[in-house]
Structures are given as C-alpha cells and as structure tokens.
Image 1 (spheres, rainbow, N blue to C red):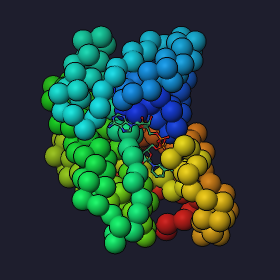
Image 2 (image 1 turned 45 degrees about the vertical axis):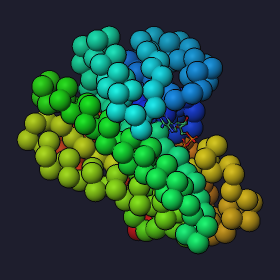
Image 3 (image 1 turned 180 degrees about the horizontal axis):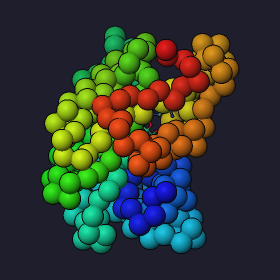
Image 4 (image 1 turned 90 degrees about the vertical axis):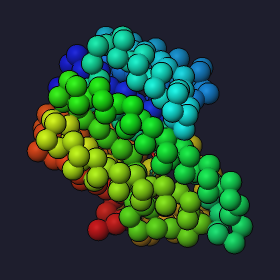
Length: 246
Ligand code: NAI
C-alpha cells in the first residue's frame, strides 16, 4: 500500500509514534524516525523496522528548534529524494490547574506541541509543493476539541494544531497535498501511565467503548490518511477515542 514511499515520523522512539512507524513500515514505506534524546530506544525501533525489509533512517532532533527540524527534513530529502508523508506526532504534557500553572509550564508545551508542529510544516511544505504531492498528518487530541481541566496549556496547543491543519489544508489543497489531523482520546502509553487508577476508571465511564485505545488503533487511522484510499479527504480531524467525543 505504501511501497517505496518515504515517511517521516516525529517522536517515534516510543508510544504512538513508534506504532505509526511500525505500521507504515509494515505497509512498505521507508521510515525516517525522529527522536529527541532516547537514542537507544530509537535504535531498537529502527532494528525492528529494518527486519521488515524497508529502509530506515534515524535522525536526532528537537522539533521545537527550527534549525534541527530543517536538518531533519534535509537529511530525509538527501537520503530518499522525496518526502511523501510526514506524521507530526511528538508531543508533551505538563498538567496542572491554572492556579498552579507557571508561565514556563505554558510556554514549554506551546514550544513543542504547537511551534514544533509549525516548524515541521514550515520546513516540509516547500519540498511537498515542489514535488506536487504529499500527505501531512498532525497528531492532535480530543482535549483540543472539548478541553480538559488541568490541561489549559495542552488543550491550547492541540486546538492550535487543529487550526493549523485546517488552514494549511486550504492553502495546499490545490497543490496535491492532503493535510489532516488525528485526535486520540485515552491511549495506553507512557504519557497516560502517570494517571492514577481512579482517574483511569472514571475516564472509562465516559467512553462508549468502555476501554482505552491502543497505539495500534491510532496507527491504523494514520496509515489510512497516509494512503491513496484517503485521497479525497483533507482538513479533517478524525477522533480515535472509543466514541468519547461525538
Ligand atoms: P509519549 O510520551 O509516549 O511519546 C512522545 C514522544 O515524543 C517521545 O518519544 C518523546 O521523546 C518525543 N518528543 C517529545 N518532545 C519532543 C521534541 N521536542 N522533539 C522530538 N521528539 C519529542 O507520548 P504518546 O502518548 O505516544 O503521544 C504521542 C502524541 O499523541 C503526542 O502528540 C500526544 O500529545 C498525542 N496524544 C496522546 C494521547 C494518549 O492518550 N497517549 C491522547 C491524545 C493525544
């Protein structure tokens, strides 16, 4: 389905990003695996991908730093000559109520989750415009749609990602580039493992499917958006949340 395509995935050393990298590789895509600091974890994922018979390039880089993102895009372009797919997955949380939220708690989340995605979009767009095709998939969150107490910073960043997705879909629609977002609900990863059991049980009560999602649930939808099956879809936000938000 994605044979010979080049796909960049940010923050792909673990969690949802790792599952996306493995899924796209299993469909035949060559993978550019970005990580910020977890080199050992990235190498393990890269080895797993290589076993699938596709090429993999690991590139260290902090997405909140435009120079490092430009290096990521240039390195991918030099190696594969083309960038068919980018999945802007890397993200962080720093949850607390606004009464306790410090200015740096807000700024650091915006720097990574919003400015980081902007940096990737800014750097990859000229390449995709020139080649006249591309699939951009931004990982937002249902929290960016409905909000969540204790996540003013995170919700603002993820709502911003949705705004950027829709704006860029309008800018690039005539140039053969699809831009969509995926909004996961509760997915079992390191990011959610810090939540207490009580919080988790309460959360499940509000999920029609009565369970948390897996990283593979998100990866499957990303694979669809990266494929030709979704060629008439752009500017959309697809919730992968067990029906939590509808
Ligand atoms: P995770 O914490 O397991 O993985 C995130 C990855 O991004 C890590 O490998 C981390 O090193 C990397 N990363 C963080 N900052 C970075 C930076 N500045 N530059 C490059 N890489 C960086 O998180 P998870 O759960 O896999 O989340 C992936 C994405 O999905 C995030 O954008 C998150 O906000 C989003 N999401 C996750 C949900 C969940 O329930 N787990 C729900 C909704 C959205």
